[in-house]
Image (cartoon, rainbow, N blue to C red; front, side, top):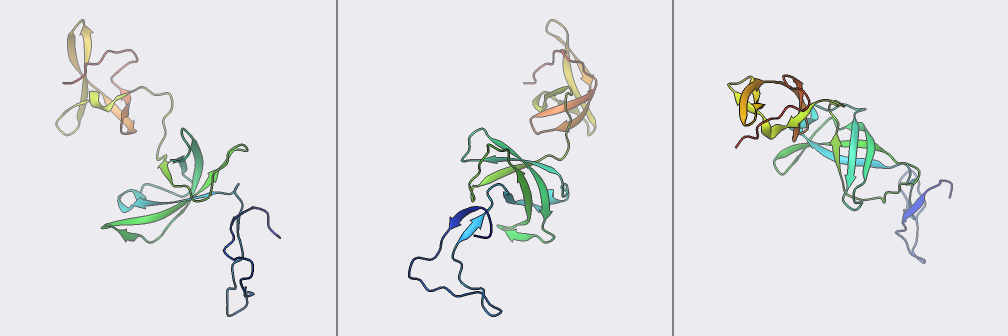
Length: 181
């Protein structure tokens, strides 16, 4: 072969006729070869989310067939046109997967991607379920001021992952917060 890679499919059998490619015919495929170190993730994103992403953003891939493994990838393509699927508009996305030397992924695995929209490391965060709200804009928690005595404390929040939320101001590490009923 003039290319390096792994043979994925040989769709012809001994004795089958093959046609050479020319200007009028694509010819007969005799083998599909792929570079298994150069993997691409293909996925879809809903129209309500596509405006939040940009080419170059990092992705974290999980593959159902590989337990407890996460693979880094970089978003390389966002389709300019969406396609309707089950009543929702979906946009195709692609990402280059970064494999380490000892990692191997088979072609055709199904995978899910988490796209990192924003990141904050080493910040104070609390479970979102502890937050209480007053009106449209006031977020607070009840903090323990004495044993079993709680006081309302307004806080300012930041990034959320859907489970925990960043606390920008209003709380210090180690403050005891009442769990709402």
